[in-house]
Image (cartoon, rainbow, N blue to C red):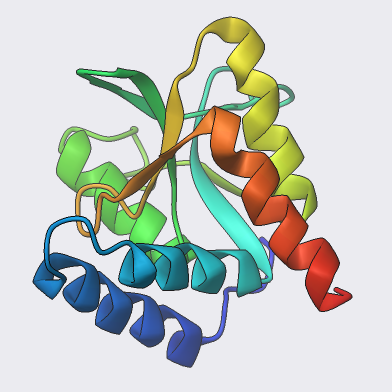
Length: 147
């Protein structure tokens, strides 16, 4: 398994989640800061579906369309898998996989061809989402940072 992200980075996501929820209607600065923090993670984690040699990320149905569930840590992905599917797998552990940044952005964006609308962060704990058509903005932040 890929090394998990820094716990301090995850704690900052939680702080930013609270700021988004407290922000006045129409103020997107906290939302932008949250997604900038998500792009600073080393890996995005996913709950695997399908065959082990070709896993697909777990997705949820939303009013806007299907949303891929990305997780800021392997621990959060495992926690969500247990909450979303209490029966789980026979071993009790959901299969997970991580994709390094910034390749994770292209990976998620590729699901647009399959009709996926967006990506949601740490569902159901945080749950903020971004449409796939806006992922280019996230990628530009990384490219602008010299990462």
